[in-house]
Length: 329
Image (cartoon, rainbow, N blue to C red; front, top):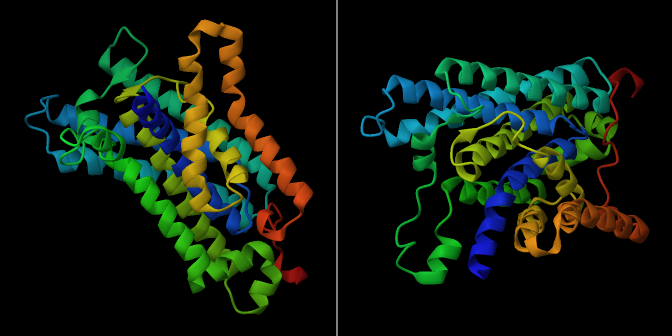
């Protein structure tokens, strides 16, 4: 039961890890992207559209489907869809200097509405009596385990039985941490987020760094939406089934203190807290609903503690949420 609980927590936490890593990259450039929930939603439906088209092109015959194409097509679609959302946000906030909070919230509404429209359209095409689309054939390729996973007992189940996107999320978080802390690019990005005027005076292209950081962060967050559909939901898309995972990813950024390495542990902890209500069914519906609040409660506690300690390394970038007007430098 303990191994199953941990594996389930990891499965629930991976979309949050993708979303939080992408948001950390964006916020390190000084931009607060509250459109992450909508971006993850668009990433998910883009991958669904890609896999839906490929499955139908193969006649829904899994023996005809190519495993590489079944994985790479929805991956590319998810990255393209979420990157376009990041470009929209960047154009509005970096080029036009629109309010970042309002733009992010509008992007979330746009992403969810667009996802529901495309999802409903696919459901109408299939003529399904249920309000969902089943892409179980594509999902089976995403869910492939590593070799020897079934032969190594609890070790194989705990460390080798996850889908490849789980390992990809961890690798991306580790690489992001190394780039931010050990490279010149990371130093330039952090300087843009802390003081864009100073970075501009030092010859760093603030607009370029903010555009690239936002688009890359959006692409990574979009993979979280795809992982939710293909792995957690076993390839089944239902409108509005994504829940509040996008907002939890934003909360996880604060919990992780803007450090991708901390986000790895934090995402699995959030997954465990979300999964805890499934193990307390005997305590009543009210108690289960209280357990669903735990990730946000923990985030608030961490926010209060770090604010009281007033350590600079535990605070967000100084320029976060502020538009940069070069002519005022």
